[in-house]
Image 1 (cartoon, rainbow, N blue to C red):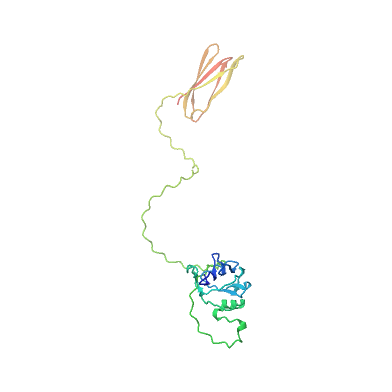
Image 2: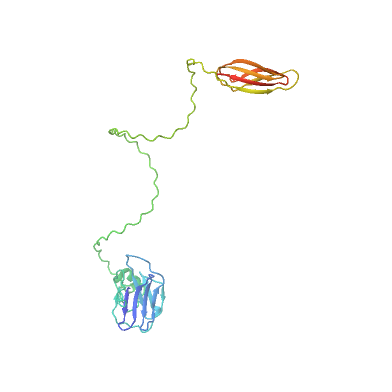
Length: 308
């Protein structure tokens, strides 16, 4: 509540206040409860901790209801003007008697002016700028001589710190300076204690194979070992026909050690026949070859006995 004037015997009321939508309102209510007045079309700006200058002007008829804020007329909605308005209670500022002083103004009031006439927009603007020192130009006489400058006022309180501005563009890189002198060598600190052994690192990749080493010296001769036979068998069915059937035969992929061997050949042709070939395989040789003939129509069983 900004201003209120009520009646002691009826419900007649005049008040100026800001409603819950932050709109400035002027209300006239007569004894019959008819309400009129004027209100701002738009909500007032929500400005905190700043002075606001409010003007209500009434010329005596409903089209002469006007509102101004900080010297500027507000767009308004006129609600009409009821008849028979008369109040006898004193003016109340900053609260409401009709609401048992339960609607105080949250803020401060200063420089309250009451005029017996409707002021112009020029005066409203002048009052917003100068307050009690306002004298509109059409009331002023010719300007007088300029007086001496007054003493400087007391410095005001420092204002709030403004927001941080945007970062300026980066300056160009300067030329490289001369190399400075080498500083003195600092004192060596005592050696620290040996740290704990760290975890083993990951295993590295396999490196390339190194060059083949030179052949070592021959070791001492070993003792005679046991004879071990590696029997290898092959069955040959010889083709029929006149004469003998002869062929070259081989045993391959043999051990590379030096060893004696015997080849036992058994074949059947009108009775059993046996033939033995003895030989010695040289060290490093993996193939034994031999030549054998079988009579026509015979079947040969060839066994290789190889001892280490």
